[in-house]
Image 1 (cartoon, rainbow, N blue to C red):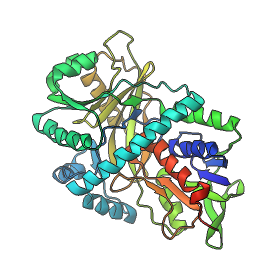
Image 2: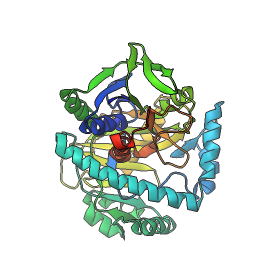
Image 3: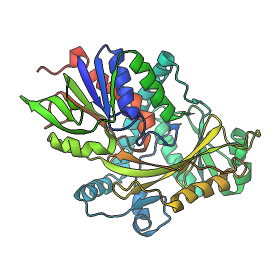
Image 4: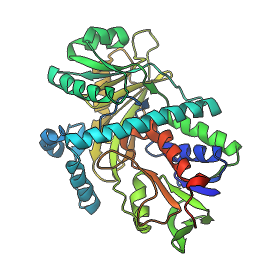
Length: 409
């Protein structure tokens, strides 16, 4: 079967890898280079065992700050955009304990599958991507927030996650670079099995391996519509002409909503804007972290990728604004100086922003949708967990297109 994958971010490329292994002929179309969108400068953490849905009951108490504070790490700025309002209302509707528990269970199951498939990809193509498996610490500043984390930990423990609460001294024993931050920590959740990698390098390595295996890449190509026949997609229309295929997978991130609507499907996907900096680290032992660290108060993550430190954070619902305000980059630099004062001279910050495609509940949209053509599958809406979930959701797409699961034409 010829399958056309729309999107060359980590989700689209993981899908192409799965489909090629399954024996399909694969074409990948994207307007930019692999990983150039939300994948390129993401947080680099692979959070397989610790997930915290953004849609959580605690959001209600934070709502005034989200709407009004210019410095809040989570920011909501209403636009004249019906999709934003529809998405926002659905998001607030998902901010309850039961939905959060259900979402956590589904994300952990998908993440476990994704870990297995990521490891299979590593064994298959041996990517040079600064991979590490040094664990993760999620830091909490106060006793109340640490107790809230304990509740999430206990919930995740019942779902198979292995993690524990650790004291500030134990944090420093696990990651010596936190020594100067001891007074700011009430404790942390430690998950020893968590990993990190450079997502952009993974994307480049996947393209290299897939190109060598005959996968066709049409980069610099804009998708602007579809040709339909008898309730199915016959071809995708691009500035390079029509591309025909037997089946199509839409993995276009936050751009999926508009094209999905053209096919008769409503995709509740809205951009969740994030930022990152990437800095060279001081090689002195104990100066820069080797363990992944998340500062829950600042909503900032730190991940070591080779000789660099990726610092990422913030989540803004501000529409498709790709500008990079200097204040947001300074926030990340200030967080680095506060948590890891000896990690880097911060001479070159390499600022980045990306539009993470989010759904109200935080669950990605995977597979066929009612109202859409039967040979169009969707793989989008992964939010801030795109790197973590990409290979698991790609596996689900491959299973849906396996001969035994094929939909009759």
